Every structure is written in C-alpha cells, then in structure tokens.
Length: 210
Ligand SMILES: *[C@@H]1O[C@H](CO)[C@@H](O)[C@H](O)[C@H]1NC(C)=O
Ligand SMILES: *[C@@H]1O[C@H](CO)[C@@H](O)[C@H](O)[C@H]1NC(C)=O
Image (cartoon, rainbow, N blue to C red; front, side, top):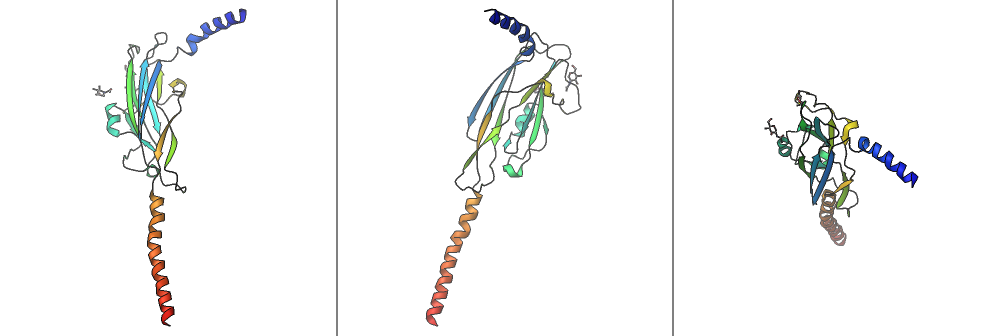
C-alpha cells in the first residue's frame, strides 16, 4: 500500500513534465486501395505554452501526395513530385508547413489537417506470383516550440528532433507490383514457339527432301 502511494506521488510529480509537455494529438487513417487518408487533430496543453507548431513529413519514393493538396496547406516542398512516375523512377521528398505561429498568443484553439497519400507502382519482382508488397508508411512529425517560429525566408523551420511528436502507429500500405517481367517473359516465348515450330518444320521438310 505504501509503495503504491509513493508511486502515485512520483507519478503525479512527473506526469505534468513528461506527458503534458506536448500538445495532444489524435489521428485517424482510412485506407482505400492505393490511397490512404491521414487526419490529425492537435489540441493545446494549457500548462505549457506553445508559440510555434509545424509539420515535417518525409516520404519514400513509393508514396506521393498531389502537389496541389500541399499548396493548399501552404506547404514548402523539398524535392520534386512527379505523380506519373513509378517508384524506381522517383525520389524521396519532404514537405513542411506551419500550423501555428505567434510571438504573443500561445496556441489554444484546436488545429486539424488531413492529407491523402497515394501509392506508386513498384518495379516487377523476380517472383512472378508476387502481385503486391506491403511497405511502411511514415507519418508526419508535428514539431512545437515555446518561441515563435523562426523566419527562414520561404523555407520551413528546421526539423527539431527533441520537440517532435511522432505517432506510435506503424502504418503500412499495400502496393501493386508491376507486371513488366510477366510481359517480358511471356512475349518472347509466344514469339519463340512459332519460330521453333517453323524452324523444325523447315529442317524436317529439308531432311525429307534430301
Ligand atoms: C495560406 O496562405 C494564404 C496567404 O498567405 C492564407 O490566406 C491562407 O489562409 C493560408 N492557408 C492555410 C491553410 O494556412
Ligand atoms: C512567426 O511569427 C513571427 C512573429 O510573430 C515572425 O517574426 C516569424 O517570421 C514567423 N515565422 C514564420 C516562419 O513565418
């Protein structure tokens, strides 16, 4: 009983510092085939004033977001997004945007944002039977600081590892594997069989005639 009580005291003393120091985030995701929608709601923590909230998100080559959607969030895109390219022809990219910035008033009102992430086609695999692959979907990291966001020209604040709120979820996406190998394999074969047939016929007809 005594131990339990001491634990409770320690918990109550430590709790505000460890857990209440970050704004609270709740998130949802919907997965529809090649498309995943992520939704975030950020609530303030009145005990720790936050003057700057910003989002940093890095995506691997097999995922993309429509640039128009990012422009609507006033995001800065680091890298280039070609929505047509397959995974092997694409590069990773990052984007960031401010959710809140004020030197005077701390963040108080709930903020929301959502993003739609699309899967690219993967290059064909040597295993012909593999039509899909399950890959990791990294979530955005939401950063916060006690001071206002530093102005960095047209860019974004530098990602701060010590103030990032990362979602503990391990999201994955199922991505279709290309069929090129299949075609490359089947096409020469269908051409080859008549060729062999004709050659054999030619050889045998030649032999018969001789
Ligand atoms: C983006 O910036 C414009 C102009 O600065 C502003 O009017 C608009 O509200 C911003 N949009 C978002 C989502 O912050
Ligand atoms: C954030 O706001 C402060 C003033 O409140 C301003 O000086 C600063 O440039 C802003 N930062 C960004 C990245 O817009």
